[in-house]
Length: 336
Ligand code: NAD
Ligand code: UD1
Image (cartoon, rainbow, N blue to C red; front, side, top):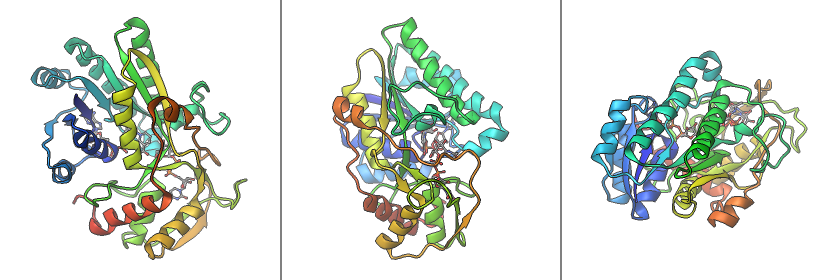
């Protein structure tokens, strides 16, 4: 297949491009580089020994998207491009709806015009909202999202559902990611957040490499085993393979939804301790106040992806730590 990967110069997109190329697919990347790096694309080529077609373009630019579809005979789209900082989205809702919702709208219009009706979308566990019972199951309806980022994901899911209702030729797969972490085992590509990391794993890695003094653990008075929040962390390479499976197995017209997670909750404290145990690098931390909007604990029921896609998260927590550290220690300043 020839696959258009929007946001392919970013964290999950770059890892997915590697898996696609290694499985024999062709990859075309569209990215405006607002949070991605061209170096990541070079590294993909180094890892796989294969070329990536790259168009520096914005998915909201209809002319540019039409040109991409005219130039390449695309079979399917994996759609990662979007903004993803939860806190930032609260202050800049219009930017988030414009990029994530309108961007998807324009992308789908360009796909429709080109006769490409197969899309795999990067959704998030956040669409279950704050009231859903754990573990999250795909049959649970979307809940009330608490920030514009989460709402934009829910809106795009709905938009794509409506598209399938209107035209049964469309094939839509919604992948709801839990907490992707880690890096490619080569150490050549990984997560490279700009500014202060919002997420736990890159923060731990930057403390370990000396870019930050200490980690603040947001709350140790939750009703969990050790008082810190629990999440379902999965290796980004497993997540990337999940996209490959979705593309190869779930290509029928209609809509399908899959959770991609391990099915296991790990606490913040366990994450810090695992990192130090595996890498032998200390991570100074202190306990701070809870972060607004955080849920105590959630993890995936990942059985549907296992049954229907034949996908399971295979890598261990130790792999996630080892690979994060190989990437971070080999690239202390990320791609810069
Ligand atoms: P990322 O920021 O590393 O990658 C996104 C890429 O999209 C970047 O390279 C950015 O430059 C590009 N981009 C953004 N807006 C664009 C636009 N309008 N036109 C063209 N390119 C654009 O993020 P990521 O962690 O790789 O996440 C990829 C997708 O997965 C996002 O949609 C995100 O919301 C979703 N997701 C991520 C997580 C996570 O924990 N990382 C969890 C759930 C869902
Ligand atoms: C966050 C988003 C979620 C998004 C996901 C993508 C919020 C409220 N939720 O989820 O919508 O889909 O990222 O990856 O932002 N932590 C610390 N110290 C830190 C950073 C994090 O203790 O410096 C804790 C958090 O309180 C949380 C856990 O680590 O308990 C994981 O945090 P994070 O990596 O931000 O992921 P989520 O909160 O699950």
